[in-house]
Length: 330
Image 1 (cartoon, helix red, strand yellow):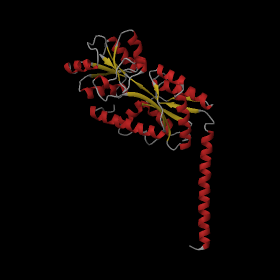
Image 2: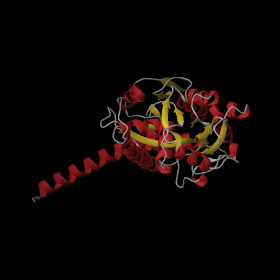
Image 3: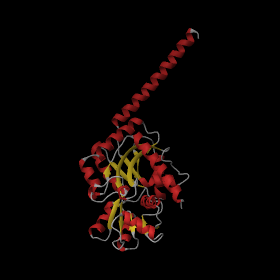
């Protein structure tokens, strides 16, 4: 290489390095000043539901924490797809975020193709909260524990009915997982919500269901239903005397609801890190833990990388169970 060419090559490399450095400095500067305007939490479900409730709880405290308004935007429809579409097509700047639930990982597993793939169209920020379900039965069901329920189901195949919040819902799969692991035959009866399935159990329309703890408590207090077990791998503080399904004769049973936050793919890592830190701080406040506990939830945060692996695992496990039970998208 001639001296002139060599000098030009060195100048070019220096300019490229300068541009890259300037770009990096600009990105870091943006992240350090982020946010400078309101943030939007998009929820793909109706107001008042569990995902919306969690979103509003976090939004309120996050707004106080970062000094900017955090607005909840409900885009209900198509099993959460409208909300996902809104966020996936938003500018990747950290100002439009998706509040997702465990149900979104089921939709991803249930559909061969989704308009917005969770693992491609979004950048994970953090898990925010988890919540177990509780297996409850009507008082007329002659069982005192899970082992007796399994024995009753085996002696009466296809006779026991269990309610859920709809085909393909988290609590529907909770029932199907019990059927699979315990090798029993029970009939699924879908309702519009988990609360409706709890009411149906209390009235005797179905023998059992898997509502969230807040929806079950009023009926438990009035002795209209009996709690046999919680569905998570660990016992729950507010129902400490109620065993888990895993320790009640169904080893390895672990099914629960969860909520987390995603940004559009391409959002700068520095902005993701800033959001992760702020949301984690808020989720783990003592007052937030108390508020979540009242909803039967526990704060649980992680790194963006851990949340990405968590979502991948959830989709894979749902896909396996859906294939086992032969569930098809309607």
